[in-house]
Length: 393
Image 1 (spheres, one colour):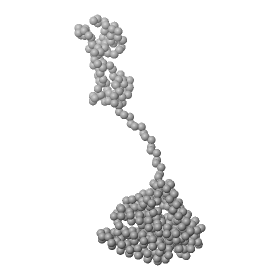
Image 2: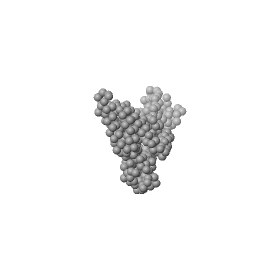
Image 3: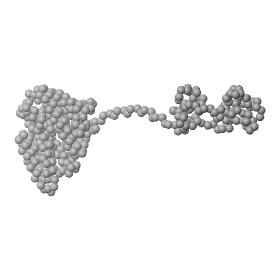
């Protein structure tokens, strides 16, 4: 091999790369390999050792960092890649910063794109409103028709509602708690209580209540003594809670304008419940009694009070003889308070029993007791205020 085939581009005595000039290679290409003949290899200049370059990411710019990654030093060597495991060289932060290195086969997955916020769900009434409205209108027609046609028929409607309510209550007590309150004396005594209140007033109602309690005590003696005190206590409570409170409705009916007094009582209770539902469903945020009834809110209570006071002023002014609008405001306030407390009391009973509704007789409403919950405790309040405001005649 002729020495003239290899020339130093930098001159003798200078450290540089040897580039071929007569073998078809382009001058200034990648570094050449060693001489192929042993004798001639002795005349070649040894290649200098290139010192380690600092890791990428220091003060050098991007061009200098890229120049450090060159091809193989000799031709007969396979391409080598720089190891990034060396403690002197830290890995690049991203594949784009390693221009001469193959992209990883399993790149790290990109984070998921942010999901759109879920659409707010519409509030639900929790019941079949169509069925509830239909049943409510039907009951209203029956009650109003019986109220203004024949008063005795209305008394019979109240007595039937009392008996059905007692049946629902005693049945749920037995199913959920094993309490066997005697239904027969309760049903007979409850119906008699309503009739006695209409015929004999408050005195007749109290006498019928006492006799019903006594009948419960005697009737329960026919069964084994286990649970006697529990059963008769539940029976006396049921007699007071359902039929005795209902007798005040019959007592309101005995006045000359009794039909309008009962109508005022029903309207104010319904309006109060409607106002609480409407305002609470639309604006309710602050719970009124979350452990008893999570659906009731303070805003709903304000709605009940507002609606009932307006309705009370109108009813006392236009329906009740010798009534005044300011009396209606007080009456509406009292009805809203008693109706809310009655509803919460019924909710306490149902929570203790672990049920949602007392029955399934009325579609969209539940049972009879689910409709009497706010009416029963409101009846004595309205009766008393009517007597105070306009008398009992």
